[in-house]
Image (cartoon, rainbow, N blue to C red):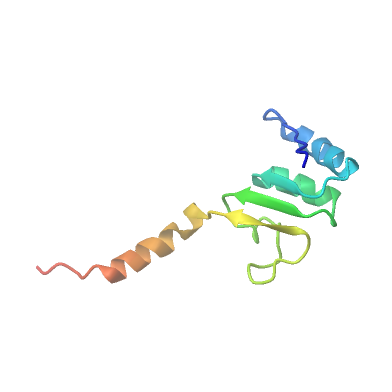
Length: 101
């Protein structure tokens, strides 16, 4: 197994070229973190599997079609911590009984 990697050094404008370079090397899978990097990879290949990780809603970001059926060549893990905080607080308030008085 060989691992090929690229680093944009904080310059998002370099991501499309880095992704295209990986596709040109005919890698078996691309792993990307953060929405901008994943979108750059998605824009250069529809056949190489892309595994992503990061925060945010991958459906809203246009990475996958839906959670149930992502479609395409992307799969991954998204924490969605900020998006789920309201629901977590709602569930917590249902678990804790109101205080008398």
